[in-house]
Image (cartoon, rainbow, N blue to C red):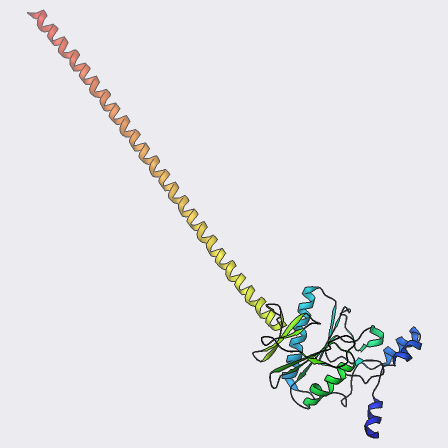
Length: 299
């Protein structure tokens, strides 16, 4: 390494070595962690790569946060977080995951302070120097003992995965895809490039990004509202039919009552006519008998 390049390399802040950290008191360690910058300089960062880069990075972060929150697992997820390994030049990956770590916000990850290094790293590549992600970081992250490293080359719509074959190994082996998916043993998920975006799968379940979740929730709300409206219409129709049935029942009862009244009146009329006819017949019979008696007496 040239002298100027070495001097520039040495100028970047670094965390203490393991030996230096071991000799420090708790107060000294806290002061060191506090003084380590929570940002990186332009010399250390890749040039901004626009929406294609940020959308892919944030989409992956959202999908993973939503999944692990639902799983109630203690997983820290960070984006472009300055990471300090002992005596190493700091770096800020696009996305990192650390298992069994508290998920509270951080401005930096100091390995000695946190008690462990990164478990999983994702870099999103859109433009610029492809060697940084595909060559330099492959060697660097393996040397640091990061178990898994993935590269999403969005410009070419390709995915690359690397894994340490053992905890002691310091050289990655490529992860071979199966049916287009790359298994992450660290996350317990599968990764896939599908329809122009990076996707995560938990078995057969696709992990959705926030916008997709919101869209589905809105669709579900619309469906619920439509269902509620339909149920309301059905209830109104049921009530209308009930009222119509009640009206018809009442009409039928009124007609039956009227028919019964008319039959009773007809029965009474006929009974009255029968009574009158019988009374007339009785009187006629009496008159005829009286006439016969008078005829016999006069003769």
